[in-house]
Amino acid sequence: MSEITPAAPALVMDFVNTLDIESGSDEIDSSAGLRRWIEQRLGTRVRSVDEDAWRTVIETRESLRQILASHTGAPLNETALGQLNRAGQRAEIRPHWDEGGRATFEPHDAGVYGALSQILAAVIAAQTDGTWDRLKVCPAEDCRYAFYDHSKNRSGRWCSMSVCGNRAKTRTYRERHT
Image (tube, rainbow, N blue to C red; front, side):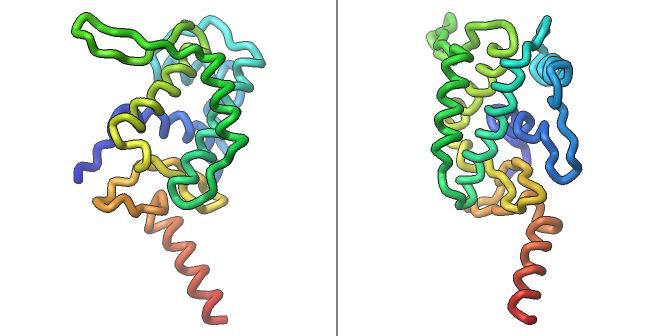
């Protein structure tokens, strides 16, 4: 299988990974950081980001992280689902048909909520094309990195078998042998 991650899950993955739990860095830790990320990643100019919109985006990112965790066995988080529904209402994702008759979801707003609608539309696209379940979150509490499972049988569990997977296996081994 190719190691190229399709565009829709790549966008969701990049968004979730704006917070690097292991290093403690957050690309969108402020309104200015969010504006920069939207401009750099989505190519959309945003004049300003108010505090409410920034908070909605942060809550959406963490809700998506919770949902992706269910792809590696965590229970589906109902609070996260509710937050994503609220974010979707604010983002106002609308269908749009091109001249060839193909429908896509397009943002209604050009600002922060328009950017959020692009991310949520990527979720829908990934679910539609069958790549959604391959998008996962590392179960290591000190990592929680979103990754795309390129394994043939979709059984990948760790962002990196050589790092997080190895740590978990070593811990399990030590627990059994002490």
